[in-house]
Image (cartoon, rainbow, N blue to C red; front, top):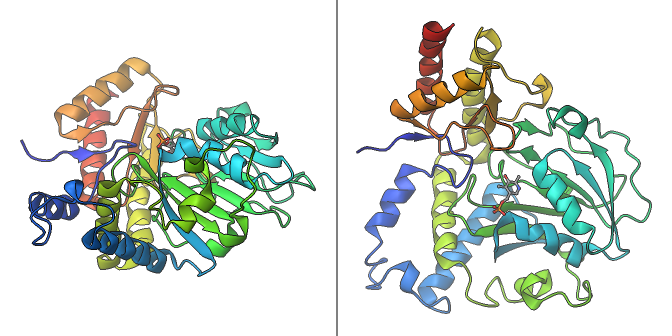
Length: 360
Ligand SMILES: *Cc1c(COP(=O)(O)O)cnc(C)c1O
């Protein structure tokens, strides 16, 4: 059985080259006689792995020196708590709710302080990004929170909100490393890595140093304190070492592809193939506000749930895997992350055309 085109939202497709390299190094990592999985996180080879990974993501994203890069276990959802516990100095934060993950983050924040929803697109089932040019940002807000790419709905901010001087905190789980970013526009950028970067179970947090505080929410566990992780170079305890190793390989792969501008170009091309077809199709349609369309997660429906199910089943039989939409919204979703080749999207569009002819 060969490899399929995997459109899963996460855990998701990884570059085949990375997987092959990891397979080759599985039993004996570069003459150490052991797998990275079996290796002390205090060993010299592992220190080299984590240092190289950090240097490479810094280079890829052009991360300024006054930002720390932290590798933290627990995935993106743990950050929903860690952010308010560490960043709420005045005990106030503003949230823009553009989907379920932003809503979860907001709800979690209400446990640690006063969290305000200053904009939301829930009125239209999160099918658009609200106008964020002049929001009622709280005068004493410690930060303004967004989910930059909404994995479930397929929307993305094309312009960052005007935070009126407050630090911007962004969940970039599903658009991580998909295009160049201006890190200085953010106070904190984080993402679970299993969408666009590596294996599940870890988040990468890029945080401006002045936001790393000693004084955190009373009772905050050491493991949930940014300062503890930052001071220890992400080695306070045993880190998710194998995840860091694979992420490092993905960073190398991204550099080899030409970096984030090259990825953006390729991702735009892939997304355009799919959206252009959706715009002309008489069977499938996108329900997302066209100007807010995500380049990473493309959602679509036929309008008939029985036909949606038939499509998903037949696509799977044709080697196009995991096209089912999120359980909360139904329909279809094609996640076309960095590691999805153009050929995968071409195969999907060809299959959709054929399905349209047979079922219209
Ligand atoms: C998947 C996802 C999450 C949740 O990630 P976990 O690692 O499962 O906690 C949060 N935010 C976004 C945008 C996601 O896509």
